[in-house]
Length: 448
Image (cartoon, rainbow, N blue to C red; front, side, top):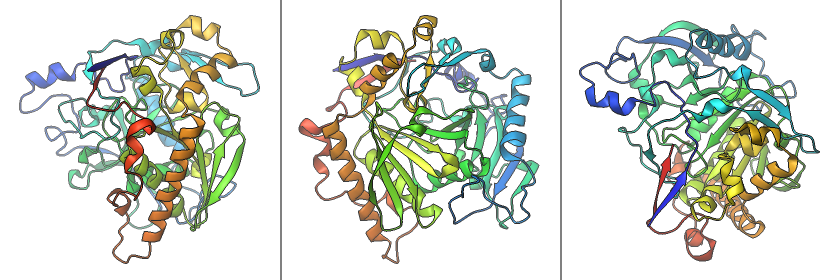
């Protein structure tokens, strides 16, 4: 059985659209100044190094450096300066600053943006939406194929504990740098991609090290209006190469204002709450004895969801102090024909930004008729049922508690959460009536 889902095309790189044709005629060097072996020797890119920190940022939402001032104002000066430079050079597919945006009347304050530029055509690509974990496929588009001009800077921990900026640093292929690159089809001003250890060609799956890197980026930005988001496969990630998205929006997201109720506190001090009176059910992580504790709690929860084939989205807010984890099932419903034609006609794929309340609309009609009722109806289709959410929530807590108990093992390494054995009693999570994804051997062809 072949399930087909008509997807709105998303192009994140100028080389994504025609990389298949280029691959066929590529010789010893591709001539595109990319990040692959043909072009990487001798390459130089700006490098920003951050100071590792143990503490979660305080109320000022910025970590104090030893000299109380970083050499570069990270968000406003470096990221946005580099991003603006790429805009001036014409690397974006449309001018996102010309997109109409409004706050939808209502108590939630959902935001609507009319972004017709995201209708750009590209060739159909095979993409399974019923498997959260899929192996990396170098024949498909990945971020090593982008041009170096799309990369803003390398982003890595400092070796000497100091925040530094090097405008022209060599790219060390052996150490596989993490990089920040533009999204050429931006949703907002400053829309970028954080690609951890880019040359390792990691599939789109959370691991402890990469998630901690994303938290550090939120901390270094030091601005509550700069958020990072993550979409798993099956939850509208469009490229199976590990990446986080981020952009700057100078208003609160509706999900950030949603009421929460505390559910539990883990042994390491991480508090877990759940959203209520919001259309999508989800968990909120905050606190912890150290930044590593907070990061590990969220990444271990994501690893559990991945291993049990549950699609999910993550929003890192408040400079890394609050993290929203949102399991979802929209793609499954879409594949099974359980989503109304009215919602499908909007061509909105509810990923992390939409779930957070920033509705990116492709049709002027939908923008003009945007209402809180319409937004709520769409997002309610994303959410797990109350019964299913309670099951998943309990198993996430069990996974986090399991990981905490492992800390006493002297052989436990920082990344061991990726390889821990499956939890006893969770083997049936993808079987029978509890299955959250499309079961069996069906493959889904996504037309992008």
